[in-house]
Every structure is written in structure tokens, then in C-alpha cells.
Image 1 (cartoon, rainbow, N blue to C red):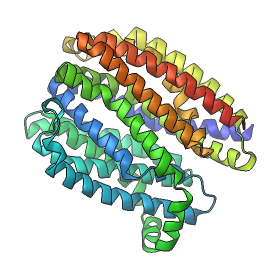
Image 2: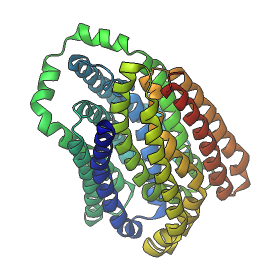
Image 3: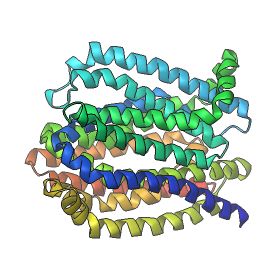
Image 4: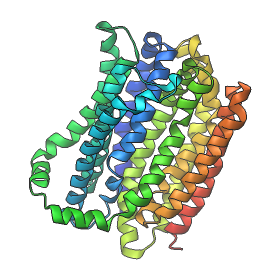
Length: 416
């Protein structure tokens, strides 16, 4: 009982930061929507798609292993591995993207020169931030983690708002805001732990790091492909809506994600950060965490139904009345995504038991099947020129896939 109360308390600590961060985003959204045109949001969405997918690659997904070891020395070793791989891969992205890849991208999803230059910085900020966040989570400093989310949102809003005072309001302003926000979040995590972090880096024992990398090799071998596919699947609409329709349609999608999926993502991250610490400890002792899984499921079910109902009622007001009539299409997108929203809230945090049990092969299989299904949706409906059908079936396919994912996760949590 006391353990459950501690879990709830920690969830609400992280939720406080998530809610505060999203209030900043929501309050600033009408201002942003009137400064930046849908096409600029579309260009930003394409950049963000590349940065998120490549940022997933940056740590080789070793950050998900940081919470598993009982000894801090092994967790510190995993942090060093994450940071080293992030540096190397970010440099590689900069060289490769500038010299080769950018020349072969279709015109609709190619990046402008300034965004190509910004891409490796975006990849590094995402990769390093993910690693530091997981490392701080080992000490269960949830207040610090909550503060990092607030700092990220505050700096993003500030930079995106100030940029048009010095230059035209293009996608570059949003990109710089994204990078600066990630850096601010990392600094909040880093500065109070700077001495400890310096010791972690200075005391690096390369042979130990290699042994640790081999011990958790399933994460780059299985989790990395699965998560790359997952992020690619999530970013498919931004890229393909630009290709099949136009940048403005991708811009509607981007704003819908910022207003709807952004808050939900932060709330789920808050719940996940608490759930995965408790689940890792419980599973490590008994090889099951069914009780914690079921209690967290009930909490998520209530949140999911509440979020779905509010989204249906408030979407027209938020997008049309608050953001302006030019964003009315985003209201339609938001309502079409309600099945996805409900199932993502329930299944996403609970699926972390797959990582704890090191059953990444199941996750990879699920991600491949989902990518194929999403690609089939676009191939089937996008040529007809009706983006509403594309978004509707994208959401339905995702919702059904989450139901399967939830069942698999429950079986693992039950020790089966």
C-alpha cells in the first residue's frame, strides 16, 4: 500500500511539470499559429521527423538499459556509452546529410541549407537529453526531471516567440526553439549533478564499458531497430502528407500533434518514468509485476476516457476559435485520432515491461507489422486525394495495434 502511494506521489510530481509545460505550449499556441504559417509548421515537421528518428539512433537505445542494473557503476557505464555514441552519430549525421543524403531527397521533403546545418545539433540535443534523463531517473529525482520539462517548454516558447523580431518567421525559428529547449532541459538535469557527471566521465574504464555494452547488446540489436521503426511510423504522416498533398497539410498535422499529442506524450512520459522504475525493481525480484501493471492500467484507463471525451468536445473550440479559422482542418484531424489517443494513453507506458523482461524480439515484430500496416494505409488512401481517410485509418490501425501490444505486455507482467 505504501509502495502504491509512493508511485502515485511520484507520478503527480512528474505530472506537475508535464502539465505546467503544456500550459505554456497551449497558452502560446494562438500566438504561434498567427505568426508561423501552416507551410512553415510543415517544414518544421519534416525537420523534426528526421531529428527524432536519427535521435533515436544516437544512443543506440542503451538509455533504456540504464535503469536495469542494481549497481550504479554499471548505470554510469551505460551513460558513457550513450554519450559517446551520441557524439559520434551526430557528427556522422552532419557529414552524411550535408554531403550525400540531402541531394537525393524528394523536393517536397528536402531540408533547406540552414536546416541541414541544424540537423546534427538537433540529433545531439535529443540523444544526450534522453541519456541524461534516464540517468537522473536512477536516483528517482522526479522533481528535477519535472523541472527539466518546464524548462524545455519555456525556452521553446521564448525562442520561437523572439525569433520573428530578428528574422522572418520561418521554420528555422521553430527549429532553433526545439534545439534550445532540449539543451535547456539537459542543463537542468546536468547542473545539480555536474560533479557526479564529471566523475562518471573522468573515471571511464573502457574495458568495463565494452563489457557493459556486450551485456546489454539486445538493446542496440533488437530495441534499436524496433524503436527506429516505431519513430519512423510516427513520423510517416509528416513526410508523406507533404509528398502526397502539400506542406500546409503537414503543417495542420504538426500543430495537431503539438496541441494534442504533445500534452499526452508528456503526461505519459511522467507516468512511464515512475512505472518503469517500480516495475524494474519488482520484476527483478519476482520476475513478474502483475499487481503494479493492473493498478497502473486502471489509472490510465480513466485518463484515456477523460482525454478522449475532452478532445471530442473541445477540438473545434481550441483549433478554430483560439488558433484561428485557418487551422480548422487540425480540428478535424484531432477528432479522427481519438481512437489512437485513447489506446496510446493506456498501452504506451505499460509496454515498458517488454524492455524490463528483455523480450525485445516481440517488440521488433510488432513494430515491423505496424509500419507495414501504416504504409498500406497511405498507399491505399493517399492517391485518392482524401487526407481525412488517411488520418482516420492511420488512427484505427494504430489503435488496434496498441490492443495487441497491451495484451502481450500483460502476459509478460504476469510472468508468462
